[in-house]
Image (tube, rainbow, N blue to C red; front, top):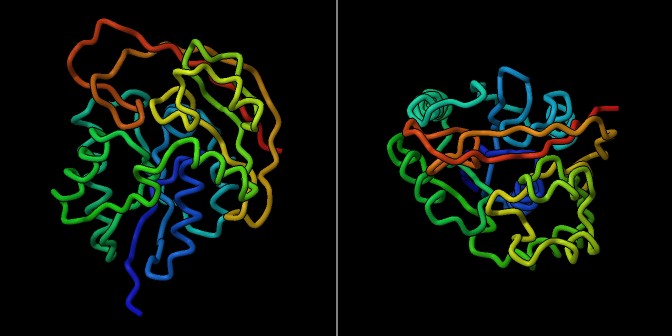
Length: 242
């Protein structure tokens, strides 16, 4: 069987974990790298704010090499696109033909990804696309995955540092997607069937940060060059490796 050489866009959170789980069950896919964008100024996963050391532990527990894309804290759209193009060109030269994402329902984001990939001659794979968020979170928990909320929008700070379970899902405001697909929160997956061992961590300090609101952004990790009048506030909790 000729396998498809792929990269997997790994954020370290629950959607990535579930999408990767499904990909690992597909014998036609050959995942060469976990690709992660890293905020180079603080050495943490972009937007999620998770320490680099914990990202390394995840990759080791999964058993797939990590490919790092280093970015400044708030790159412009043009800078982001150029950096991604350079790395994707390099990966294509290694034989990569497809790029896998854990997106669920954001049409604009999916189109953005597919358009950028097409410019380079790559194709996208979206293993959990258009599945119901409630169904996904139930499958995630049912498979034995565990994940902690590492970052939230300002209004959801009470959930910061909590492990997602049935009670937390019921406690979320009705207008919040249970998978946080609209950017309401981001998570760090620390246990589950894709990991050879659990990732030990402890909770550190909570930090609030305000960013200029992007018009259209990939996971809110960069901003458009146009000036935006509104700021976005996020709570982060420092997850400390043990």
